[in-house]
Image (cartoon, rainbow, N blue to C red; front, side, top):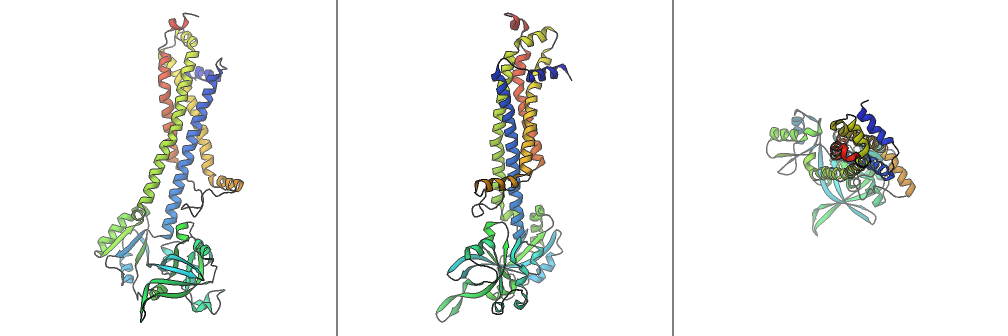
Amino acid sequence: MSFELFISLRYLRAKRKQVFVSIITFISIAGIFLGVAALIIVLAVMNGFETDLRNKILGINSHVVLMKFSGAMKDYPKIMSEIANVEGVVASTPFIYSQAMLKSGSRTSGVVLRGMSVDTAPQVINLGKMQEGSIHHLSEKPQDVPGLTKDASLSPGIVIGKELAKNMGLSLFDPVSIISPMGISTPMGMVPKMKKFILVGIFDSGFYEYDSTLAYISLKDCQEFLNLGEEVTGLEIKVNDIYQANVIAKSLERKLGFPFWARHWMEMNKNLFAALKLEKRVMFIILSLIVLVAAFNIICTLIMIVMEKNKDIAILKTMGATSESIMKIFIYQGMTIGVIGTLLGCLGGLSVAFNLEKISVFIENLFGFKILPGDVYYLSQLPSQVNYIDVLIIITGTMLICLLSTIYPSRKASKLDPAEALRYE
C-alpha cells in the first residue's frame, strides 16, 4: 500500500474536531448510494416494461402482416406456399379483421372481430394463457366440445378476452350475439346482420387493451358471417429474428410485387417504443442529478478536510512529500467515498431490481392498493430486467464524476505553501 493511500484512509477513519465534516462525508456516500441504486432500479423497470410490452404485443400480433392494396386476398393458400421459401419466414396464417358489436342480454360492447385458422394460427401468434376453454374448440365439431349442451352445440364458437368477459358478465358456454356493421339488404332497407355464437374460450394475454376488445372466431365462420366467400383480409407471418422483420418485409414485397404490401411490428408500434426509449433517457438524466449532488458534497468534504489538515500538509511537504503525492492523498480520499457509495448502491439496486415483483406484491398487500391497475396501464405487474451494460455505464459514469469532483480540492492542497501554513503555529 502506498503512503498516499494509507494517509487518505487514515483521514477517513480519524475522529475530527469538526464533526460537520464527518456528517458531510456520510451524506456524500448516502447520495452516491441513492443515485446509483435509483438509476439501476429505474432502468431495470424501463427495460422490463419494454421487454414485457414487446413480448405481449408480439404474442397476440404477428411479426409481419401481408395485405393487398386492392382489398381482400383470394388466393391466400398459393401465396402462403410462395412466401414459405423466403429466407427468415418461419410460418404464416390467414386472418380476417373486422369491427363488430357483441351483445349479451341488455349488455353490448364494441369488439375487434378476428377470424383465425386454428390449424396454422398457433404457429404464428399466442393469445397467452387460456383461463377457460380452448382455442381449438373453434374448429371442433360442436358435439365434441366437453360440457357443451345439445342446444348450444348448434351455434359456432367464439373466444374472447377475460376483461371483455368480465365487462359483459359472460362465462364459459354462454350464448352471445355478434352484430356486423355490414348489413344485409331487405325490403325494409339495409339491416345489420346478427348471429348467435357460444363462448368456448376465455384468454388472458396480460394486456388490458387486447383482453377487453378482441374476439376470435374460426376463419370459416368469419367468412360465412361477413359474406367473404373464400377471401381473407391478409396473412400474418412469423420470422426467425424479430429485429430483421423490416428486412424480411421488404423481401416479401419484392418477391410478390404490386399490389402486395407488408408492415412489420416495429413500424406498427413505432410511436410506443420510441416514447419508451425517450422516457428511459430522460429518467437516466434526471436521476444522474442525484449523483451530481453527491459529487458536490464530495467537493465540499475535501475542501473542508484540506482546510482542517493545513498543518499536516505542510509537515508532509517539509518531510519531502511532492505536490503530486499530496494531490494523490485527496484524490484517493474522494475516490474511496465514491467507491463505497457506488458499491453499496450497486448491491442495493441489484437486490431490489432482482426482487422487484415480490417487493411490489408485498407493498400492494400491505397498503391495499394496486401499483399498476390493468385498466389504466398496458401491464398489470411491475416488470424488471437488469441490463448489465446499463449497470456498467452507471458505475463508470459515477466513478468518473467522483474523480472529476476530487481534482479542484486536491490541486488546492498540492499548491499549499508550508511556510504560510506554519507561520502562526
